[in-house]
Length: 139
Image (tube, rainbow, N blue to C red; front, side, top):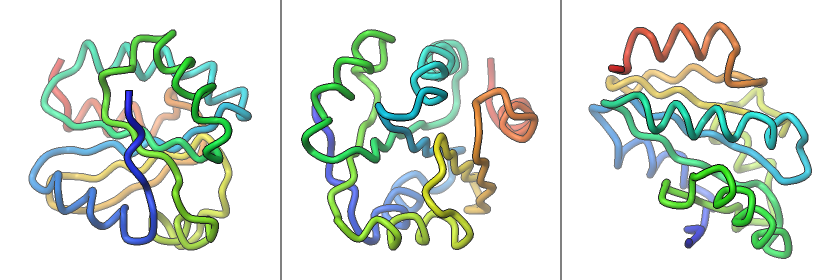
C-alpha cells in the first residue's frame, strides 16, 4: 500500500482529476478515535455503492504511516486511493480544502460532478453526508 504525497495544491489537483464524477475526500488520523471507529463504515460504503470516487487523506506524520496502513488493511481499505500529508505547513492544506477548516477530524469534502464542494466536520453518518450520497451515488 502506498500513500501518495498530499502537499500544497493537492486538493485542487484531486478535484480536477476526478471532474465530472462525484468525489469524496476523507481526512483522518490514527490519533482520532472517531476516525478509527468510522473507517469500517467508509469501507462498507466504498464496497456497496457505485458511481463515485473516494480518496482517503491521512493527516499523520510519516512516523505514523505504518499505523495508518495497518488500520486501513484491517478494515479492508488497502486497495483504496490513499494520500498522506507531505507538508509541514498543514494550515495551508486545511485552507485549500475549506477556508474555515482548522484541522478538526474527521473531515470530509464532498465534491459534486460540477465541482461544487460541501464540507462536513464529523462522522460519516452526518445527515449532510447521508443526503449527499443518496442524491449522487448509486447502490
